[in-house]
Image (cartoon, rainbow, N blue to C red; front, side):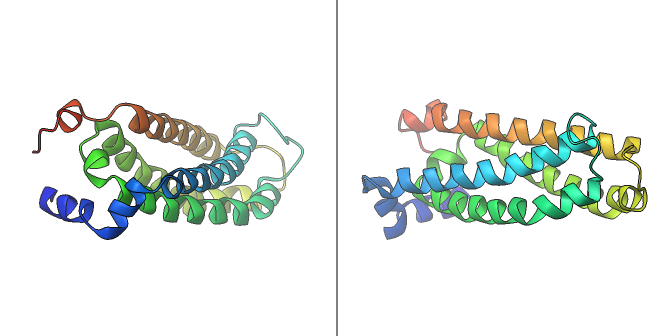
Length: 170
């Protein structure tokens, strides 16, 4: 796998992203905008599931208003994240925080799947403001995972693998 990462690191796109004064920072800004939109709207849904905001609103109404924003922000975040990875593949690949982030992203996706397949039908048919325990659990797990993903992402930017930064190639 590291051979592929090294090859990717040597591609003209990767070199351009590293050497350009604007490409990487602009891509990072776009990534953070996508993150803010996606995770921001997800957090509103999670807070509603936990009963901490919009208690008079039906969960289905909150989801229907915010879901498109969450998906759009996620698409922006995903594409810009791939571009960011392309800019420094060796650095990211050898950073533990990045690997942790990459392990948590599928868990967040599974939580979304659990929510839409198991929880959403329960809350959509329930006209009351009360959320079943499965909904509160999905909201709590979602908030926890996204906060952990954000923290791991920020650590990735500041804590590169010392073996990589020292010039040691695995």
